[in-house]
Length: 587
Image (cartoon, rainbow, N blue to C red; front, side, top):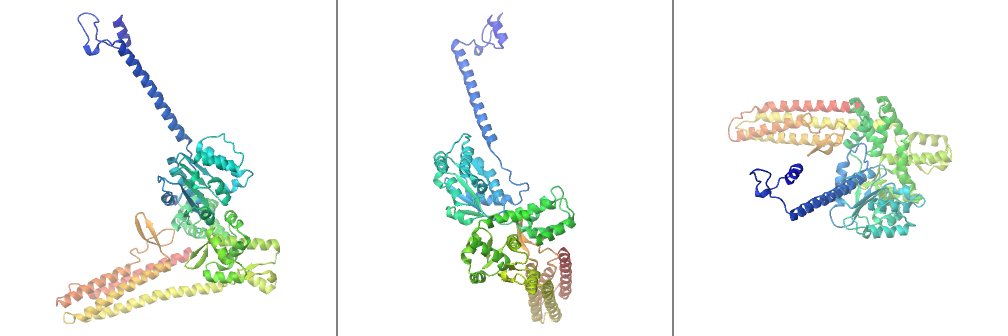
């Protein structure tokens, strides 16, 4: 019976099964104690299996419950900005940090905040991205509802009842003060929102990170947010790429569209919102429609872009609005002291107004001059035009366009309501000025060429007169060759400033590039033909001088190099002329 049980169970023990055959002692029949141990091992395995299953279920639940936010359809330029933010956040350091993301509406604050959330949320015990704080807090009981969202998303509890904002504050302090959390408040515009949602660092556990996006820098500093990331506009390459993706999401941007696209990118001034809206609007349209749309936007700005930008304007005080309007209409790009003097004469408070406009990212100060983004300037002018149209047809409170100034003064209509006038040059005057600048640039090119010709003629004369018995002539030729090299370098610097070349990074290399959609390298061989010829002549002149002072014959025919240098100059000049013609066609 035992043997049958062994065969049926597939187990063989050390016992006799018939004949003289006997199993090894190591396969002896287990005793009662052995059965108990085996049963215990089986139970342990079952227990461990359940424990492992519980761990897998818990991890799976955490992974499935983690929410990844939709950042952007085309996240151009996001990676570098997320890296900058991560440096400010310092995730892993055992403290509580509040970091602000500051910039004008449409600059990409929310997009950056979402990308940061996706990259670091897994490192915290709980996380919450609180979107549209400004709009949601304006609803009845809005702040209480926002507190509920923060608690439910971080704690994972849905049934949370809060009677009022004060109770919500106490619950947040009690439940989150020992948790390492990531909390992002997007679109904050009032101090009350910060006080009720993230009142202080002691509300949260060590290692927590609070990110606040706002268009008001004073709001952030007033809440002791000292780490502030200022979002800058996209550079030309990033802006061009983002516009191209929106305008041609499937195919590559055709070459004939690139010229118009470059003009549109310059119009949008690196604001992602404007690039996305205009690019999506032009998607699938012909190049003629692109040109017409661009001309229309230059006269009447896009309403969707204006609506977004006007949100910050509506929140300004009336006195600050007046300062904003005057800068937009008359004083953009002017010296700061001059602007203050002019606005003080209008009985305004310009210093306070300018400070507020800087904090709300409407203007920046560069080299003591006030600068306003072109889209924001258009917003100010459009506001004036709408206000004038509501009060009367002939009323013009501020005049900056030549035809409007001419109409009001010649017809004597609405002049009594006019508060400010700026007369810009007429089209003919602008053409005259542009022709003068063109002549100035052209004359500068001819001056450089004339100097180079004079140097080469003198250098040729000294080279012919030099010999081992007269080495000082070779010295003069060498000095003239060095001067020619310096002249070529100065000409390259002048051309770089004229073309507005930009220092950019391509992979790991930093170099200068033309500000064009093709991103062409500045300083390529066609640009430096003249410099290469001058350096070659300088080397040969130096060799000749060294040979002559040693009373040796020069193995290199130096008299040929001035002619070679002049040929290089001619080729370089032809290349510049061809590029200028191409630029003229693009414009």
